[in-house]
Length: 78
Image (cartoon, rainbow, N blue to C red; front, side):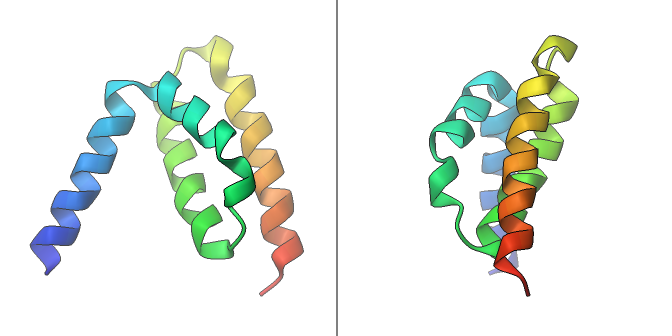
């Protein structure tokens, strides 16, 4: 089971690394679907990874999306 989880995670990382701009657009397009703390946690981790891959001119988009998600995360409480 652990190998399957690792393999799945690596495929996800590979998809992000192959085209971080497209993945950022995907996140932005699906932002309304991130409605639980678990979903938001996952996408925040992905945004952190994307942040490292993008051209500095695109970082404003990552910051904006992160801000929206953090506000929603706090609103969901514990």
